[in-house]
Structures are given as structure tokens and as C-alpha cells.
Length: 435
Image (cartoon, rainbow, N blue to C red):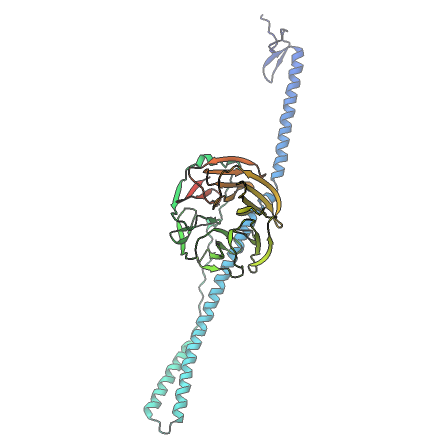
């Protein structure tokens, strides 16, 4: 019979115990140690399972999906407005057609009154005139009979809801990786010097191309367009409250209705040299084209009116220029260029008072003209374009630099279209990247 030694390498003792858990032969001393280590491991695993319960409990909080409810509620509100507008339009159509019939008949009756009055004033009335009058009266009487029997029949079709009007997708926010999509999967030519700016909502992307403002859908097909003759576009943004895009042109600001593509100048905002724009649910924020840039807030409802103004040095120093302002989740990001030392940074401010939250200096060399644009992405993170060095800066929600991505050409404006399409404008194209 062979002697079985303890499984511990350094132990020369004879085995006295077999562990049925791991099928090892152990001496009495090492079995106690071995058994104790298993108990510690089981306790650690049990603690980890309990931790899962705590983490799941933290996730089971509807505050995490309130933003989704807000979007659906906003869609419902906009849909109600569309239905109300359609309803009032049809009511007006019924009223208009009804009064058109009445007015048309009244006009004929007035002519009969005039004709009978003229005949009564004549001394010698011919029988043919009487016969013509009788014929006219008979015609009007026949029309009156028809009018009295005329009623409006309303044919109403049920409102059908396309299930794709609201698409719910689960997106892992940790999977954002721009390295995988260094080249665009599709491009749209934009060879122009008038505008490289971008704006989007959940359905459409707005761009300027070939003298037109163009709405592009998620399949990157042209849906609508409208001729643009109002000068160079510096910036644009979307307002869900107004259901319109907002366009900045030096001293003028325009609304673009998404449904009709009607272009309307906003007359309630005074003329200033504007540069950048962004919208919250309640306000429009504009920055001025100047060093020591000013930020001005305007209400959106019930009308677009001045609310408050922030000036240098609160916004930035006198030798600094705010290059972009972007709203996201009750905060506004500012990209700022300093002309004295050529430094660039991104700052995050909280609403309603633009209180300072954090700032990050960006390692970007060279001058800064029309660029240094940014976009919010998932989980309150940010992307900033580095035009001269062909890069994108990825900043996390704590204001820390996460990654610098190399880009194959000079990026101008940047926009996250829907939830998974990153759009970047360049000198000659609008580039579309799948996330």
C-alpha cells in the first residue's frame, strides 16, 4: 500500500483527510487551513451576491428613465398640437364652405332686389321683362330649395398610429468607441462656404446644401428642402417646444418650421452680431460674436422674449471668445478660445444661473476661427472638434479627458443624430458614422 502525502507542496506529512469538495488529500493541519480558506471564499462570494441585490435595487428606480418619459410626453404633447391644428383647420373649412354657399345665394337675392326695384320705378314695364324676372325668381327659388336640403356629411377615418413612431432601443453607454469608425459609412457633398453647421431632432437632420436648407431622415434620404437666401449661417439648433429649427445669421435669427419648411424671421429679438445658439425646453440661449462674449437667454413660450443676460468676465475674460454653446440635461457646455495665449478649454455651467461646474483645458495648438465646436453624447459626455490637428476630444461627465481620437480630415461641426449616428461636417462633406 503506497503512502499518500499531503497535497500542499511544501508539506511532507501523510494525508489523513480527503476533501470531497476539491478531491485533495490533506494532512490534519492543512485540512483546517484549507477548510477555512473555502469558508472565506464562500463568504466573499455571498457578499458579492448581496452586492448584486444592492446594485439591482439602485437600478430599480424610475428616476433613471424619467428622461425617456419626458421625450414621450413631449411627443404626445406635440401630437396633440398637430391633432388640434388639423381639427381647427377642418372646422374652419366647414365654416368657410357653409358661408360661401350663404354669401353666394345672398348675392343672387340682392340682384333680384335691385332688379325688382328698377322695374317698379319704370312707368312702362314690358311683359318680357316680367317673364325674365319670373324666370330669375324661379331659378333662385330652386337654388334655395336645394340649399335648404344641403347638409354637410363628415366622413371620419380612425387615426392610425404607426408603431415605428416611437422606437425604444437599449444602448450600452460604455460601448462608445470612435476608433472603430474612423471612416464614415456614408457622406453627403456640401462643397460650399456658406454653412457647415448641423442641427437635429429625433427624426431629422438639418443641413445647408446647394442653396437649400435640407431635412435628412435616419435613412439619410432627403425628405424636404427650402431655398435659403438669407446669408451665411453661423449656427443652428432644434427647439422641441417650438417644433422648429432655429438659424443664426450674423444679425438675424430665423425659425424653420419642420412640417412646412416655412422660414420666418424672429422679430422679438434685437439685432446683434450673433454667433452660437442652443435650446432647453423653456429657453433659447444665444452667444455674441465678440471677444468677451455675452450670453443672452430668451423665453420660448408664450412668446420669444428677453429674460436675462450674462456678460464678461462672468461668461469669459475680455480676451476670450465663446466658440460654441450646447445645452444638455440642465447644463450648458461652453468652448472658449483665448486669443492672448491661444489656449482652448471646455466649461460646463448649470442652469438657471450658469453656475460653474467644471473646466478642462484642451491641448489644441494654433489659431481658432470658425471651429472648436462640440456635441453632447450619451451619459452626459462630450465630443469637441480639433480642426487644425484633425482630432476629436472625448470628455467624460466629470470633466476629465477620456480619449483623443484621430480623424482622417479636418472636423468642423459635430452632432449626435438620433442615438447612434455621429455627423461631422468637413470642408467638402457631411460625414456619417455609425456608433
